[in-house]
Amino acid sequence: MISNQTIDLTQQVVQKDGHIVSDMGGEKVMLSIENGKYYNLGSVGGIIWDMIQEPIQVEHLVHKLMGEYNVERSVCEGQVVAFLEHMAKEGLILRIETGDVR
Image 1 (cartoon, helix red, strand yellow):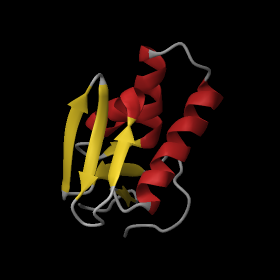
Image 2: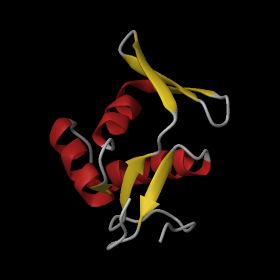
Image 3: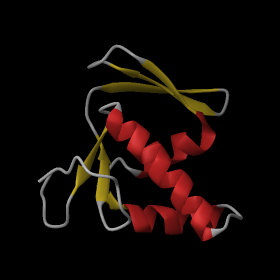
């Protein structure tokens, strides 16, 4: 079941189909075919977007980002969850509860 609740670290997230994504000057930009909006994901947002091509647990995503960047865990968790919640609100990603199949 896909949840409409706040994203937590135990959930998996994955890109939703239907977007055109391109690299522009080191940042990712995206057009959502579904809602007709453009998004500038930025450099780190673009990295997160690439990392969620396949379902990944949010905790694992945070762990990978902490390995790449010198950031405190609480800051990384907060920023990642906020980014993913915005993406979910815009209909760009899917949240998957444990045991669900895409």
